[in-house]
Structures are given as structure tokens and as C-alpha cells.
Image (cartoon, rainbow over all chains, first blue to last red; front, side):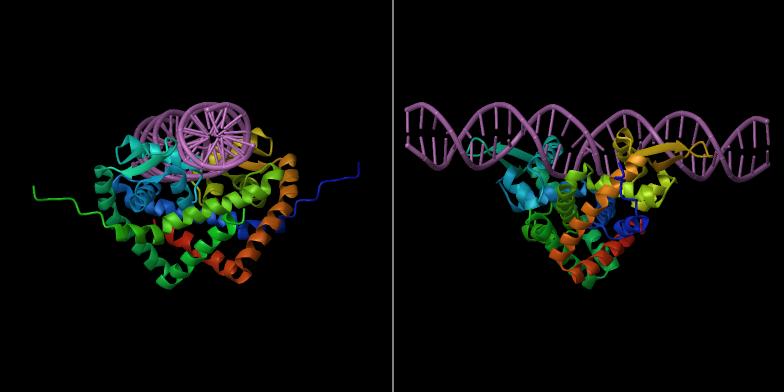
Length: 155
Length: 155
DNA sequence: CTCTATTGCGTGCATACGCACCCAAAGTTG
DNA sequence: CAACTTTGGGTGCGTATGCACGCAATAGAG
């Protein structure tokens, strides 16, 4: 068997570590998540949970599947992410006319907590924007959107 | 008690949903991760695992803590992420001179799998770059780096 | 109306993520 | 050296993530 495995190209590894889209996105995502989780701590909500509450407010009475599509998230992931919020009484899952669907609604407590968290979120967001530079953020936001389209919609 | 909770401003919610850095980063991160996990499936490695193998190759014999810092990841997260790779015999954790440290090394099997996965990764990366636009990706990569600095180093 | 395909959700499984906490080894100070 | 501090790691807990699979309700075909 003269078939030997290709030698491990360290240079390629370094290049991959530097340029990998997946790695760099995940890394940035972790860093930003921590920043926002930190800021949101006094609200008792994680950034992921705040996002869900916001989406529940905007898409009042939406089904789980539809909401998952909006958030570009697996349906089963959303199902589980809803659980802690439901336990804490911030959202409610009720059946629609179609007995299969489960409609997501904000409870009054959820509305209160969301309303209280929004200013805290805004503060964190503005601080981040400022530190990154408004112009750069604007551009970055557009690129994040383009990335989702490229990565998700072409699957 | 005339102290009523602030009314829930739907417009603010929509604005938050649209602009939130955390949400948009996490969303993009999910989409890109799926794209790469998809592409990497024949290699038997997830994108997160490939990244760790690459890092293990580049930082040969590095400690867990140091590697976690490099990857901008919690130490305990890395500890657990190493486990499946160790079980599969792709990496090895050995003690250093300092009895506290655990040094991460690629096994021969790990080197083989990594070498085999690199071309697959490159294919996925190039495809993504091409669809997003090379110039845009270049810019985006720089902004991702700046984001990590802003979000992480300022904590 | 029955049979079948589709749709909406949930669960089991495995991994990914980070905080709080604990333990042991190494360094520091008196 | 003994006592304290710092450092490197792991674990318990709870959440986040998605795939494969299964179940029930609906829609569609005949």
C-alpha cells in the first residue's frame, strides 16, 4: 500500500483558522452574546430569550413553526427555548383552530418584562454600535443579512 | 399606585428585532454553521470539531486554558468539546511538567482526519466566499475581528 | 367517505455554550 | 517550612442547537 495519507499542511491549517467563515462567525457570536447577556443580566433575561419575547410581541399569536422560520432556527430548538419562558409565565402556548398548531403569546408578565428589558437592550446595542463605529455597524448588519441569505436560502 | 409599567412599544420591538447585534450575529452564526456542517458531513466532523483539530495542529501541545483563549471560548466549554474528539481517538490530553495542565495533542488518526477534511472545508469556504462576494467577505472578516475585539476585550 | 400524503409539533440523542463552584498544583510571603 | 494566594482544570446546572424519528391533525385523491 503506497497509498499514504496526504501530509498535514500546517500552512493550510493556519490559513483555515484565520479565514474560516464558520469559526469567525461563531467566535464573534459568542463574544457578542456574552456582551449582551452581561448587559441584560439585571433584567433576568438572556439575549436569546429577549429575542424570543420580542418576536412573540411582533408576531403576536404566531405558530411555533412560523416563528422558527422568522428566527432562522430549527423548530425543535425553538420548542425547547420556549420552555423556560413558559415556565416563568412570560409566554403562553395555546392551540389554534388547527388543533396541530401551538400559538405563541406574550402574557402580561411577559409584556412587562419585555418592556422593562428593552431600554437595557438599547443601551447595550448603542454602546456596541458606538464602539464598533456606526458606519461599520450599518455595513456589518447588511453583510449579516446577506450571509443568512447565502448560507441559509441556498440549502 | 399610579405607577404603571411602561407600555410595550411595538415599534421599538420591530426596531430591536431588526437591528439587534446579538440576534443578527447568532442568526448568521446558525446559518453558516449549518452550511459548513452540511458540507463537512462526509468527513464525519462538525465545523466546531474541525476548528478544534485545526487549532490543536497549529498550537501543538497547548494547554486547555490557552487554547480556550485562542478560540475565544470558555474553558469549560472547550473541556467538554474535547471529549468527543478524545473518545474518537483524534486528540490526546497529556499532563505537562506542571501537573495541573493538560496539553492537547493531535493523534495520528486526528492528523489523518484533519488532512482529509481540509480540502472539504476549503471547498465550502470558497463556495461561501464566492456567493457572498470576495470583496464583501474580506470586509466582513475584518468586521468580525473588530467585533470580537469590541465585544470581548472590553469586558 | 376512505386512503394517503402533508403538515405541525414534540422527543431522544448528541453536541455547544458559559457561569458558579470545587479541587489540586504551583507560586508567594512571612 | 507553613499559610495564603493564584492558577489550571473539571463538574453540576441550565440553556442553546439541530437531526432523526414518531404522532396526531389536516388536506388531498379516488
